[in-house]
Structures are given as C-alpha cells and as structure tokens.
Image 1 (cartoon, rainbow, N blue to C red):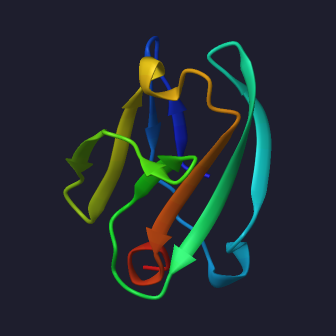
Image 2 (image 1 turned 90 degrees about the vertical axis):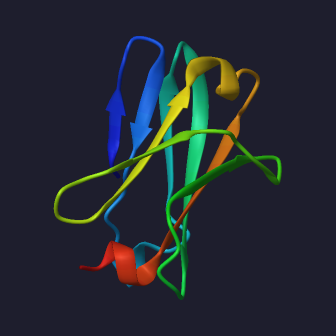
Length: 94
C-alpha cells in the first residue's frame, strides 16, 4: 500500500492494480485508528491525499525510475478518521 512511517510524517506511494480500486485498510497511524481508502483514476494522475473531501498539503517527491508519492505531516492528519488516497491507473500499474 506504499506506506513508510517516519517520526512526524508518512510517505504515501502506492503501486496498485485495477482490482485494488476501493480497497480500505484500517491501521494505527500516529496513535490513532484510521481507515485508508484507495482510489484509482483512469489517467496518469499523481498521488493525492484528502480528508473529508479536502485535499491535504503534502510534499511530492520523484524517484529516478518513476513519479514518486507524497510525504504528509502528522499535523495534517490530526482528527482524520478516514484518509482517501487517489492514484492514476497508468502510474500505478507500470
């Protein structure tokens, strides 16, 4: 699911297949139980993260072989029970 936990942030860089669209994962993240919902779009869109329909500010990063994901700070996720993660299908199934 492309998650790397850091002291005060999380890197989100999923690689998903078409059948993964809509999958949800529950986990403890920064001491709170949260649900991560993954969505695929039918384009080459970058990774986006939103809470309650509001897109979160995050730092994008690139990898030498493909577009990378996002780093989201712990403070941006305060109070978030459900986190929506979207990624473009062409980026995801390479």
